[in-house]
Length: 223
Image (tube, rainbow, N blue to C red; front, side):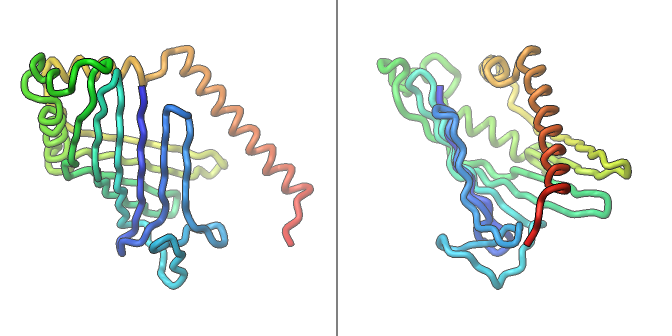
């Protein structure tokens, strides 16, 4: 099984903030961005634009996805995600909405034998059409909000931090989609043992970062 993603993040003026590439086959991620004095710098045609003010309240992510399983390839082209990052006195809020249906393409042959078109004989409709209908319901529903996600980051007085997240969307209710969602949940969602490992890794990373900050405070020197 294979999943690939390319994400281009742009600001309100269409300038590029970052390009992210993900590859599950090789467990690889690549991030390309310009940074100056610890802050993102916009770019155009792979060249930094230093005279433009950085605004994060009206961003857009252009996402291209490629999924492959048993020889069938599905492509999701130019999924547009509207993003907004808003700083507040006690923290920040990140909001994301998907309100447009992307283009969906399917090609390949299951197990190298059965063409994708022949699989349509066994399902109600065709694979790209079913995927588009599902995305139409998700992006146009939810009272006009489409696929809506939000996260709130709060800095407490005692030095601790709080992260709250929420999301909502509508989904086309069919037996085939329920079956597919179950397979995705079984493959993607970690079991109890994996969840414990993730929690331990998170705590270990936090403690190591705090120790590094403390050591830098004692021995570090800024020129």
